[in-house]
Length: 182
Image (cartoon, rainbow, N blue to C red; front, side):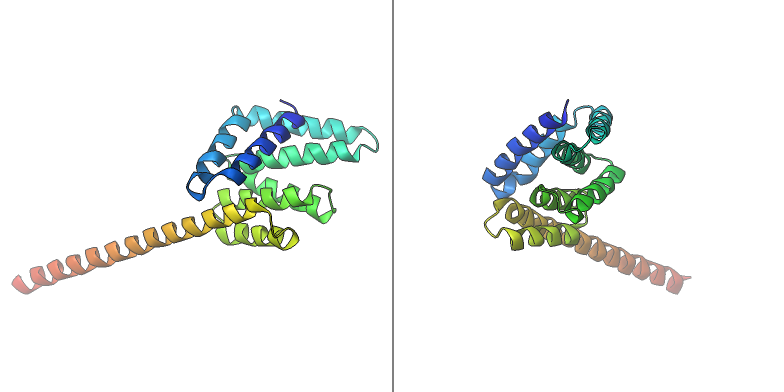
C-alpha cells in the first residue's frame, strides 16, 4: 500500500463521514480503520518507508507532505495508543510548519485524540478547524459524536458511583446488624 492509496481511502471515507448521520459516524470511522489498517504493523512500516524515501528526494516538499499526512492518518486510525500519540505529534508538527495540508491535519489530530478518549482535546481541535472553515461538516459531526460519548460515559460513571454507594450502604447496614446481634 502506498501513501496515495491511504490518502485516497481516507478521502473517500471523509466524504462518507460528511454524509453519515450522527448515529453512523463511528461505524463509518470503524470501517475506515479496518480498510486502511488491515495489517496494521505492515501498513505503518510501509508508510514510514515511504516517508523516508520521499525525504531522500531533494526538494520534494509535496511528496514529503503527502507521505507525512498518510502516515499521520494511519497512526490516528491505529488501535495502539502509542500510534495515536505519535499521530498527534506528527500532524501537529505539520501544522506548525504551515503545511499545505493543515486543515486535514486539524481533523486527523481530532480523530487521534478521539480514539485516545481525550474528548476535550478532540473538541478543541474541531473548534480550531471550524474557526478556519465554519462550513466544514466533518468537525461538526465529530463534535456531535464527542458530545454523545461524553454524555454516555458520564452517565456510565454516574451509574457506577451510585452502585458503589448503594453496595456500601447495604454492606454497612448488614455489618451494623451483625455487630448489634453479637
